[in-house]
Length: 100
Image (cartoon, rainbow, N blue to C red; front, top):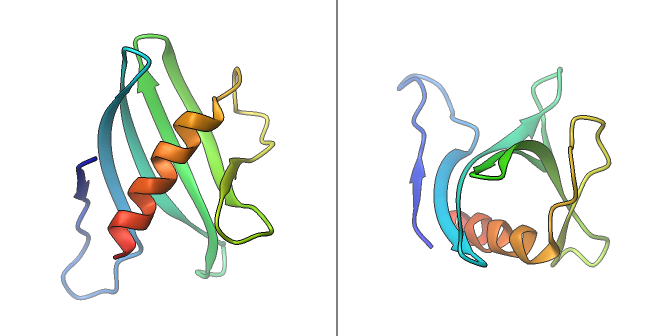
């Protein structure tokens, strides 16, 4: 899966933000992912995701499971519908690829 990093200001350390596209079960998805930053400016270890397809747009948070290897969706109110774990796993694969 391909990704495109979103660059910030040249004089500041960028927090990770990127976009990606993929097809799953014959549905084309576009996603924008960004490291979640606390109000104090610290990286929280989660990712905010805007996921769009012809089925609609969803905002969700990706959270690492306790095993530290797998990801799941958060329980936020803004999440409409249920994101399949397969889609979460695809997004997690992109996060891993971006970090390497």
